[in-house]
Picture (cartoon, one colour):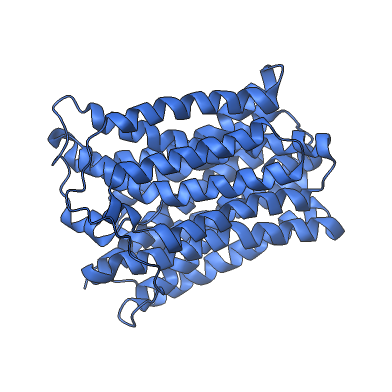
Amino acid sequence: MSNPVSARQADDIAPGRYGTGRGLPFVLAAYAFTVVMCGTTLPTPLYALYQQKLGFSSFMVTVIFAVYAVGVIVALLLLGQLSDSVGRRPVLLAGLVLSAMSAGCFLFERGLPELFAGRVLSGLSAGLFTGTATAAVVELAPRRWATSATLVATAANMGGLGSGPLLAGLIAQYAPDPLRQVFFLDLVLVAVAVVGVLLIPETVRDRHGRPRGPRRLRVPPSVRPSFVPAAMAGFAGFATLGLFTSVAPSFLKEVVGVGDPAVSGTVVFLAFAASMAGQLLMGRVGVHRALPWGCVVLVAGMALVASALLSASLPLLVAGALTAGAGQGLSFRAGVTAVGGRSPVERRAEITSALFVVFYVAISIPVVGVGIMAVTLGLRQSGLIFSGCVALLAVTTAALLWLRPVEPNV
C-alpha cells in the first residue's frame, strides 16, 4: 500500500543521480523499506492468539487494525512533505524509530493498551516512511537500474507488506513463544536497517530545515473525471486488502475451521503477492483497460471469497485471495497512473495525497463495519455482506469507466 511521492520527488529527481556503481545505498534503502512495511503486517496472523490470551472479540480485532490506518492518515496529512525540507535520511531514521517502538509495544504487551499503541506507532511509521523511502530508492538507484527503480520501490513496499504475515505465521506455528520472538526478530531487522540508512548518502541537497505546514487537500475540476473512478476502484480494492489483513485469520478459524497461524499468514501473503503481480501486469494492459478490468477481476475475487465462506472451503478462499489481490493491484496502479497523468505537476503531490487518504479510509472503516456486524450476525454473514458491497462498488466503477473511459494524460 504505497504512499504518494511529492511532485519534486516524482518529476524533478532522476534515478541514478546519487547511486554508486555497486548500488549498495540503493540496496540498503530498499531493505529498510521492506523491513518497515513488513513490521506493519506482522500482527495479522497473531490476532487469534491475542484473542485467546486477552479474551476480546472479532470486533476488537478490526478496531485494533483500524487505528493503524488512522496513524497512516495523520502522518500522510501532516508529514508527507517533511523529507523535502529536512532530508531523506532524518525522516527514514524517524520512521525506523517508530517501527522499533511499535515492535517494543508488542514485545512487552500486557493488554489492549499496548496493542493499540503498537498499531498507532506502526501506522505513523508507515505514513512517514513510505513516500520518503520511495523517493530515496529512486534517487539512489544506479543508472543501470534507472528504468526499474520505481518497480523496485513498489516491490519493496508490497513485498514487505506480504512477507509480514507469512513470517509471523510461520514463527507462530513453530516457535515456542510466538507473541515475543517475532517482534524480537523484527527489532533485529530494524536495527540492521538503521545502520544501513546511516550509511546511505543524503539525496536532498537544498535543505532549509523548515518543514511546510499541513495544507488542505483539494482536487481541481479538471482531474475529477479521473480521480472519482480511481478513488472508487481503489476504495473497493483497499477495503479488500484491509479485510484480509484484519479478520482473514478469524474467518479461517471460525468459518473454515483452520486455526494454524502459518496457513492464515500464507493466505494474506498470497493476496499481496497477487496485488504485486496485478501491478506488474498493468504495464502490459494499459491504463484504459486495466482500471475497468481490474474492477471485474476484483468482483470475481469477491465471488470466490463469498463461495469460500458459504462452503467453508480453504481452496476457494485461497483462490479468492489470489483473484481479488490481482484485481486490486491492476486497478490500483492504473488509477494512480491516471490521476498522476491528469494532475498539474505543481499539484501532483496534493492530489495524489488526497487519493491515498481515500485508500486508507477504505482500509479502516469497512473492516470496522465487518466487526460490528459480526457481533450480531456472525463472521460468515458479515463476510458475505462485505463481499457483496465490494462487488457492487467494483461493478458500478467498471460500468462508469466503460461509459466514460479515463484519460491518463492532459
